[in-house]
Length: 93
Image (cartoon, rainbow, N blue to C red; front, top):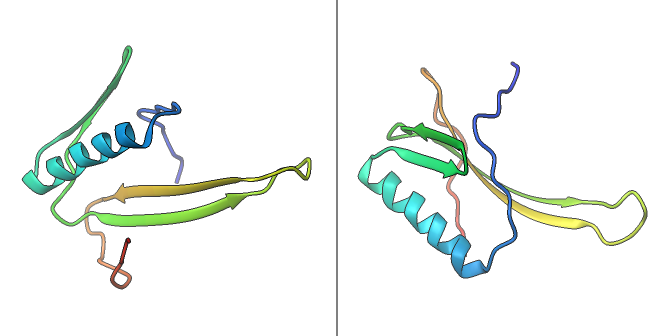
């Protein structure tokens, strides 16, 4: 299935700034509201269902030049109609 990017934002930030954004998303999920993303002239508003699929991925991307690689943690919410629940429990510490 082709993928269409509706919104993209990337910027280096302090950990505290990132935590504030994640708290805002968490509070919105808790209340069942819409998540509005806006940066410059780009914006999108999404309404996650009460049971979206939550994906957490830790990755190491190796450098083609043999230098140090890049580490990442990705958090993703996915949903569509008729999607089944899956997987086990998650612990983040």
